[in-house]
Image 1 (cartoon, rainbow, N blue to C red):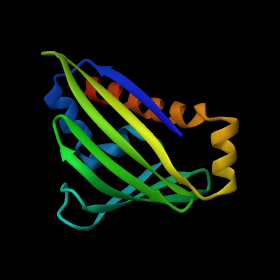
Image 2: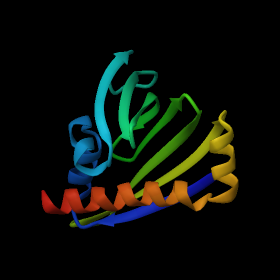
Image 3: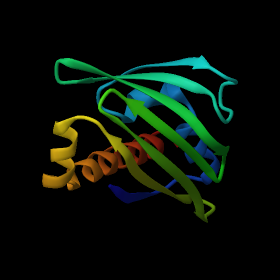
Length: 147
């Protein structure tokens, strides 16, 4: 399953990328975010891994982020492995003008190990896109409020 989401942010590209690149900011725009911990490699570089924890309902969801490409301010790509599967996320940032920018995210679920994940991807594939778009819209609000 593959989809694209995007958002235009009324802020200069450098501010958008700076906000995106800070793990400290995740709590401000990703619902359920609990923690981010660097676990291996050179932080911010290709191959580096970090543990990300989210609270979903009553359970914790633990993801391992592996940086696949870090060419900020243009692009940041990662793979996210979790108990039920994995996905890749390619993030591109574009300058619209001096005071606005665009964030384009392409997500591809490359592995779904749980029956529930497989069923949800078939029955309600829009749910995955909707959650990503929600976080991107919340990011927009966060950045514009703090610009």
